Image 1 (cartoon, rainbow, N blue to C red):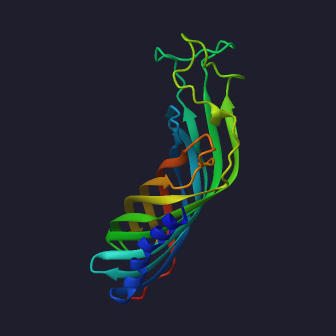
Image 2: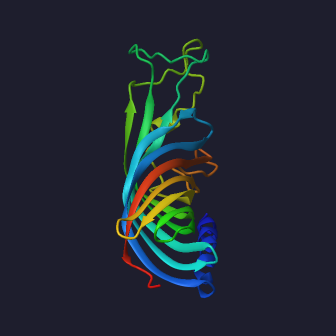
Image 3: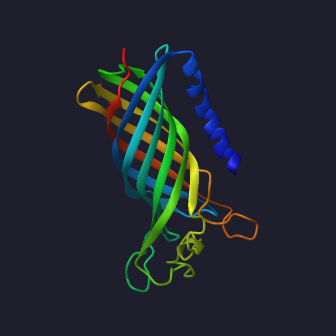
Length: 247
């Protein structure tokens, strides 16, 4: 599975290598980001889910190395804390709520906390130092497991009753500990930046993360063949230039 990360790094290399061709830049920016994450897990066999909502935030650094025709090329790194996971949709065979012996509609969600480190090729078009530009980000991301919590309101799930039991009877994930402590995958997104010479840089971005790793083992003897993350992230970032290109 490591070859997926090698491919992602190769996607970034051409942008840094092309610095020999375009107009040289030497702008180093630092700042902070914060946002909201909608996440789910691609289980196989399938687990019915809605989106799990959580917060993310951390530090951002960016080095702008060149302008090639109209493209402003940079490398961007982040160190973020993120609360992601999955939230199950628990319905009976009549597409209604599943009522357990405690008289409540069953609910289950797992929140998993990570330190996430994306390394992104950052390409922008528009105003470089004063005004608006549009940008795209693309690159690999690695995440390190910190811990997880479960939110449920039952002791034993109702799966056996023909009338009121669950329509989706996959429940192994509810009691399994997270096995893989390192997550990795590909992040890509785009957004709008407003740059001001004195006030700094303000960004709004939509991003998607596709996990190439799994939460659980996926060998023939394991229960799940796949258990990878999908994240939709909306985030705002503020940056200020520590070092600026002299023009």
